[in-house]
Image (cartoon, rainbow, N blue to C red; front, side, top):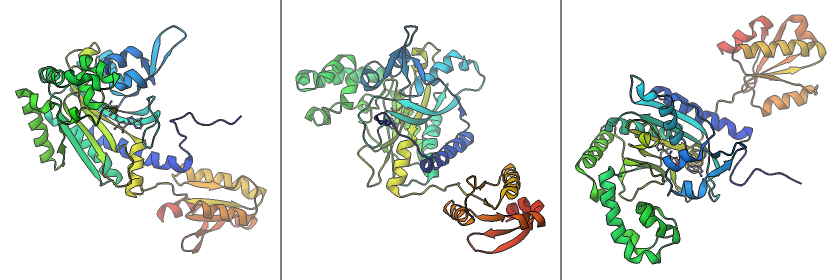
Length: 421
Ligand code: HAM
């Protein structure tokens, strides 16, 4: 019997995890600069939270959730996204009472969706996301978008496209809903059974249908932007003005509807335009969700956020041929000759590490030549060979691998020597 990772999941092996850590560092640094504090919520939540939060008619809730009943008979679901949980925590811990609003949260962790596996689409993937809850200021919409764009810039991506739209407010959506029903109803028999159900429940979702994408009625369906109320239109104009001020280029796409029900006003996605990037080009998605906090049992607090998966970010780096600056330098490899030298090597390696110098040594009693080969394979910057003579002299030749130059350094001076180089 041989075991494999479950379909749609992957092992991140050591030669990949260095890249993950680099990306995570960029995310941490930018969260600090933008002042979004980390929140860690459980991997599973009550199923109802997602039904209410993400929306009953979405593909996520209808088809993609990993839902199970626990031994106490509760229905729980592995989180398919992070916004509902962040908002639950905002309400549960009464963060709306904090003096500084909006409360700015960030999170990173695995999410789970039972989707068809393909390049860039996994059943377990890691999302980084942010939520700014408690402000309906278009400037915060621009901040959130700018944060997302900065992440991609910082890792070195260039082939990007920011697409934005306004989904308007409740009034906008009600008027648009009626228009959509009038548009699709006479021919709804030509659509898939899902769309037939969507017509009454949530006709906006028809525009998002993967099956009926090519139906001629899709192209001339009523656009939400034609139904924006004065407030919504003004809000959208202000968001665009801020983006202009920040020098962030964007395209307005009136067909951008997003796959989750909680959105209104600003919606956005960032796509990769790199040739060679697979069929799924969306790297990041987000938007405003005024009303969600109330739906989850809190006060009327507006919010906006985005999420992106690290998997797709790494695919985009690959497609653009961008190498992350790796930080995996082995500073010092200690080659050991004999038992007494080994005892000293253990001490020295420990001292190097205590001083922030990455160091390693042989733990397999191998011949000197084999140890030197390891040092070379690992790209060690310096190598020292410890034997009886060195122990007697309390000093050792430090070899700089790149140049081949050697310098004799007393044991007591080794750390300083490496640090000063
Ligand atoms: P979403 O568009 O469903 O939005 O997902 C956001 C991002 O997660 C996508 O753009 C993509 O990078 C990544 N993603 C989604 N599904 C997969 C998958 N199966 N495999 C790999 N990556 C995937 C949300 O989740 C919202 N909670 C975003 C948000 C936060 N809106 C407001 N605040």
